[in-house]
Image (cartoon, rainbow, N blue to C red; front, side, top):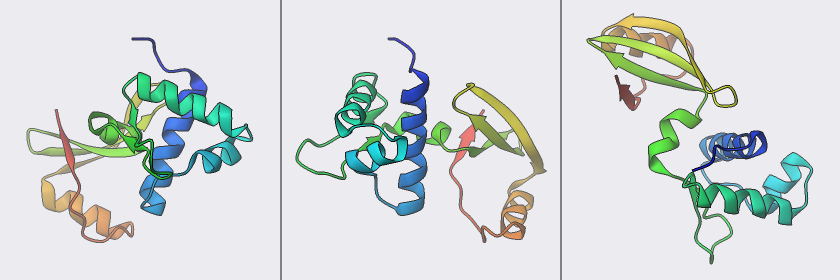
Length: 130
């Protein structure tokens, strides 16, 4: 399977962020407006992402774009990785396909305290196991 183009990665990242912040996926028109492209071009990007197994979409619903589950953890800018009792706050750059360690924590409570300190409250985060 071919790699994603830069524009497809940008669209995929936008869909992930929009869905996370708005609690619903964007419409084709909202994607077109964001990238200043025609809705037919946005539809072509969505179709390509569906073919590449990055998205699913119900043909009958305007807000039915969904990320394929296996990619959800890596589409957001930050995620947590756990390895032998250590928790790592990771930053993932989708365009460069690179991960970077932002912070490391010994144990679950230290990680949760950190998240509370930076304004995320006491979170129950899905963790990527190494």
